[in-house]
Image (cartoon, rainbow, N blue to C red):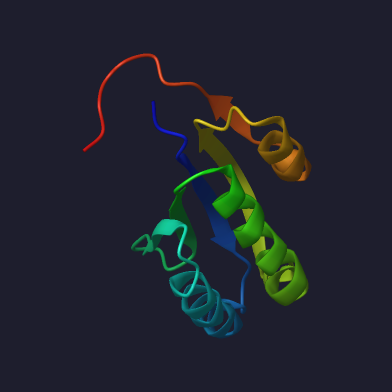
Length: 118
């Protein structure tokens, strides 16, 4: 059984913050690209230019914790004031340390009911 953890963060970019958002986003992508346990790190923007979704998938709980440590150290202070999180759904986070690390974001946790991943 896979230990991978994924999530979908839905957010709105605050008015007048799109340029600053894109600067921080690019820095975050560059950092995540260097993390060997980060499998997916995809940013999607709606036609309105303000609604955004971020899909992230990690190899295992250790990769999640490493990524979150980097986020808190390097980006949280710059990123969080630019957005309003509207929904955060986490897939497959069974490890208590991952649930604890994500608790401040008040996510909805979902467990796999059935299906497959390739």
